Length: 178
Image 1 (tube, rainbow, N blue to C red):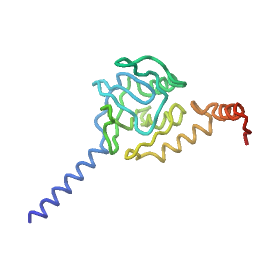
Image 2: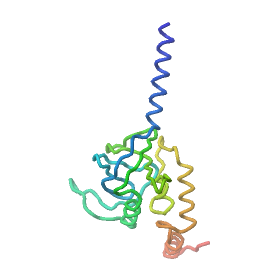
Image 3: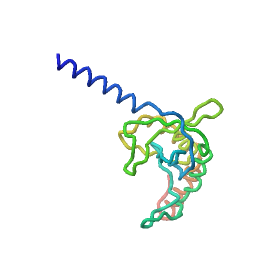
Image 4: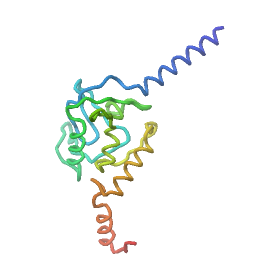
């Protein structure tokens, strides 16, 4: 019947669409690192890492970008550069494939001596990034939370002096620190 055919066709299209969301394209070369959470591929496409946020190194002033790094912005960009610049990466997509600026949203994988590491997770683990959870792209949020916890416990990167900075802020406003 027509109804059964429509249902079968809809099911096939749904399965195909879901497969496209999770499927990763062929490896792509990284032309350059824009900052700690954004790269440019060899073909010119920009990729924003899902699930992380790093301090900015540039800010927009009208139609121009001005170098004006936030604290730890240069370090985050350098950590990303060491991971991926000039290398081949594999992209994995989640539910949304583009952000409001037209950049690809992806989990970025880089091969390291036969092992594959997710750059997003590595930057969190090194303390070069903060967790940024924006539904519906939440596939690896638990892994990312574990990586952040590890960075904080080991005082890495952004978290290197987190306790000291917190203590100084509390003392500056005259409150006791437990």
